[in-house]
Image (cartoon, rainbow, N blue to C red; front, side, top):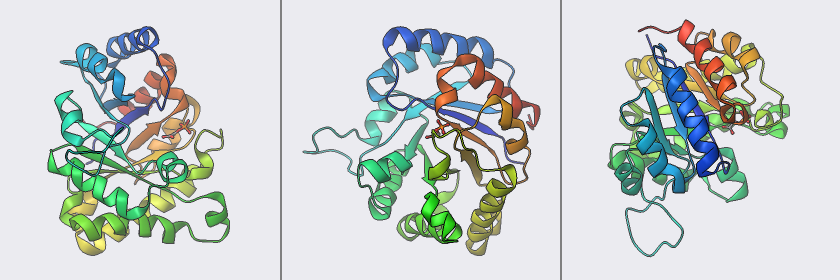
Length: 254
Ligand code: PGA
């Protein structure tokens, strides 16, 4: 049975003061939850996250990573640097990186590999735009995004990684995929991975992202192939994020 993961993507939000309040509230509320919990914080706040979250049930990670290990890449942050600040996870291929910063499938696959090289857990984000969904391309798009990574690291490279299905049209819009719509795509992703390795597919955590809120989390997480959530807006409000964690925890396994 896969343990649920609830991860907060703070995006480019926060300040030392705001983070201190949010992190303290998360630590206070996370005890005893039967799910994994993580926050993806902006890089300058990794040290703060490490200081406050070390020894607590809340893990932390970076929102992106360089495909390179070191060198003349101004503005980039390497996987080893994230590791230096205790990150367990890193987001790879978030739709905002794909759309706003032109990250393509191949670059994302190289970032995924860079994370793996230092033992970080990559959370590979995949998802279709509204136009692609209307065109009936949803499964083709997420399969292509996944396949680019498999081509680079092999299916064994997915062991222990996380996939986040985030339909682009549901991110930050308040429009959520219905539980049935999300479940169908999650099942398709798992079936695709199963073609290469059934055991890997059975263990792979596939979380849903896109306007998850306390009001819809329980029904989404109850779907057979939805193993938790990647939360944007609601991750900035401690009570909301903890309520979403609680929804996952109620379905938890240990
Ligand atoms: P949202 O963001 O929950 O605000 O839709 C999700 C994400 O971008 O990961």
